[in-house]
Image (cartoon, rainbow, N blue to C red; front, side):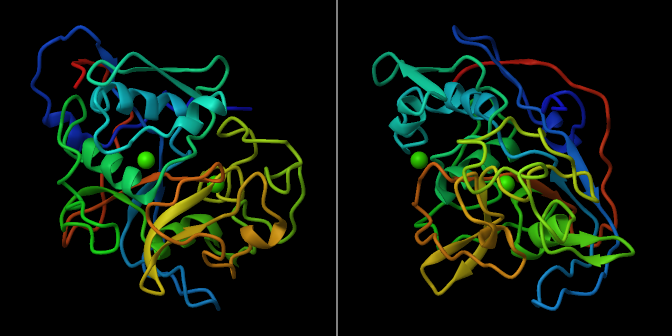
Length: 300
Ligand SMILES: [Ca+2]
Ligand SMILES: [Ca+2]
């Protein structure tokens, strides 16, 4: 059963930042559900990945069309950074109307809970910065990442919304507390169309959370969309893991690293992202409050 991605869970940092007024297009605040990844200091997998020495949170779901459309309505009225890709429209996920300066965005019927595709690592950094800076008309170019060409950026220190590091992503996908590592991100060592969306069994993306959560309570770490991580591979690529709705079993395997993606500007119908949240230096734990904070925000 699908769990609505906006229902619960709010890391409190961004809540303190907003001061604004209503504008002509009001947007709802993007909310995330979070899984807390503990077991600090776990051993790495035989692949060398997966050890994380601090407690962090990762979104239980891939970023959805509905969440990304809120971002677009807030920050892409002109869209000078190419946050929107026309394929979001032609694939019947997010539709853009209007003219430059007054673009508006709406989610296609029934697609709000599907993960957003056609997003680059650049778009992912800007979305994360926007969360970090408090949403609304907040800046997208600084915050967690000083956005440059896509291969120079590293996360700023401190309590942050981030794109998961490869180890953070790997642990949340494959580690099973007390049981070692699984082969697939759904905490299983075998895979089928009943536990993950891959190999075109479902002929496209599925709503986030349609399949069972893994051992940490995280969904769709195997398949649906492949997901960006912070790793820089070969000097020219950002990391991507987890396989997608169209990819064969091998792409979901824990031993598979970024075999089909290259530049951080890459955008296609198989790649999305999810958000993580890390503590500040010396902080052993972070607090996730369950209260839902609903506010209205001005559009950018
Ligand atoms: Ca883009
Ligand atoms: Ca995925």
